[in-house]
Image (cartoon, rainbow, N blue to C red):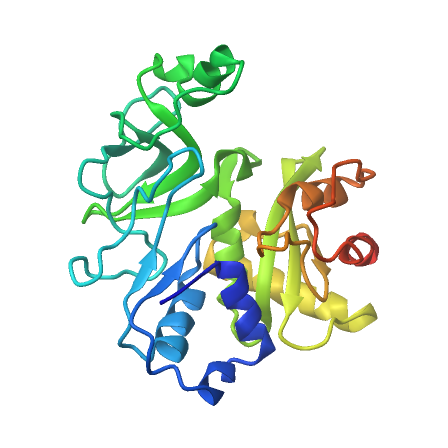
Length: 298
């Protein structure tokens, strides 16, 4: 079994898409992905190149607070869908609601909640039960639902797709855009892009502006070449999603700031996008030198 994060999968793609073909992977039976939403392009590469189209991918959604897997395909039971964690485990009553707590129709997106308790769930926060209630059972939902903090959509077959954290939803000129949606569009340009992370920054004209940090498959560009590639990627996103989603700024780096477990530290990217000094703790950062590179990159 091989269980890893989408960031690691995209890093393998950047290192050379045929890298796994150099090794004997015939003992693999099950592949897993965890930690953040996986874009369909990375999912397909994982399925074809690592799993040789014979290993099911268990795309698991869960949290430390949930104590166990919550939404995940069961190998041999669920038909797989690239980018989707499919359906809740038996006994887990998930739902997608709007900002007032009302369930939305299938085919639409909203806020992921759990409607009933389950055995492994977090019970409280040490020494602060009120914070526990406010954080996980907010008054906006009348204290009825466990708030996961993630946005999600559900297709007509009831399959869930995680869109990212609620606070990663941008409001650009009155349009709500999920950062995961824009990241997926960028990574869909398989000729150029290995990895991308999108954040927002305040903008006088549109309220928020889209800022993209991009790792290319080739060497990091500079000068006119960087401007040309950035322009090409903006047009690409415009065609994939719409003109409103075009990144206002695109910065290129050799990598993205990640923890040792491979998770992108988006709060640091938000600070860089806003031009703020980074005062947060970066002790868990694997590659601190990348911060200055991204600050300087235009």
